[in-house]
Image (cartoon, rainbow, N blue to C red; front, side, top):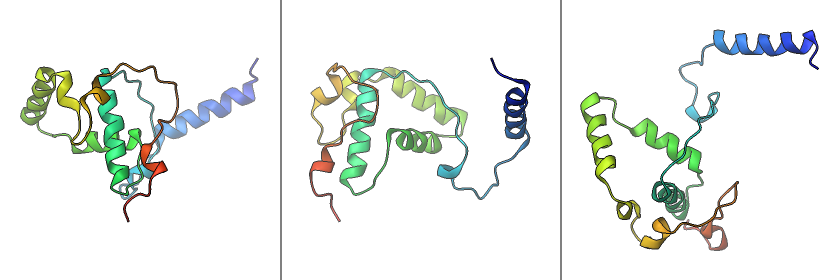
Length: 129
């Protein structure tokens, strides 16, 4: 059972978060985070892994979270363009998700995945300088 001291500390922390503001010059990767729960179509999930691998093959260490954040930041901020992107997504087929150089089965295969970090093929090779 939680004592009143713990409850007041938790409430103070929640109120402090509500009443503070992120300084405008704060780099996005340094900003406080909020968790979002997402379930993605299997081919989109596989494409996300392929995009991480693509960036890492180019020598850029990254993560699925960073790729998703980059896509959100780069998304259109006008209604017309956003609706155009949504319609493209809704009309796209599963085979449109492969990246260049990837095998189609890499995005279409239903593989059981364990929770946690994804294995990265480039770690077993020398990345480009």
